[in-house]
Amino acid sequence: MDKQTLRALAHADHPITAPVSEDKVRELLGRAVRGPGARLLDLGCGDGSWLLRTLQQQPGVTAVGVDLSEHGFDRTRAAAAELGVAERLELRREDVTGYRSAGPADVVLSVGASYAYGGLVPTLKAVREHLAEDGTLLLGDCFWEREPGPELRAMIEGDQPGYTDLAGTVDRLAADGWTPVYAHVSTLAEWDDYEWNWTGSLARWALDHPGHPDRRQVLDTAAEHRTAWLHGYRGVLGFVTLLLRR
Image (tube, rainbow, N blue to C red; front, side, top):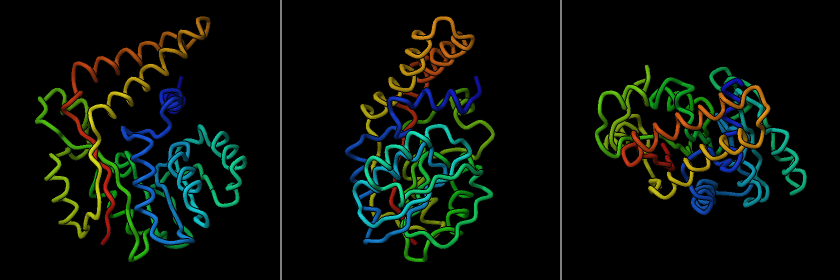
């Protein structure tokens, strides 16, 4: 089974694709959209869940989502049609690094997608190409709640520029010309709900498909992720979602 299909299965019960609660997502989106008729762009949109929620909350808003995978697009488009907002939503299967928007967006979202650009600072540079001068960036990224050991740091960061603590993350944003106007730091309960859904969705699928040739791979992926979380980064890796303006 390819990585994109595994990712879609893992997020089946938590389509937010980040350790953030539904109530907090609604609050963040409500704060991000500052006027009627706002144009939204989600770079690394997953199945488009954040945009769909925005369209439900904000009449007149239009939204474009871009992601390398189109898993979940059909489901989100169907939900948008049922809600009567389909004409305001566009989902595009495309590499975000090559995407060029037709015009500046009032709100750009990049939630858990900085890896696509090679880290936080390159993501900020890329966002500038799409965001209106007085627009808002809704950015979600990881940071270290506690200093990790070298093995955990290598496992989480890979070959990308390293994370820092929360204060260091905000300092990097400020040094790049951004001002936080609001932020939410994910709680341990939000993390746990996200991770139990991530691993549980995969495990349930594998147990429900005993004859599937990918069953063993999916079970192993769930077990490996659960071990990495419970024995590694639980309570060590944090996640912050910020509203930023220039």
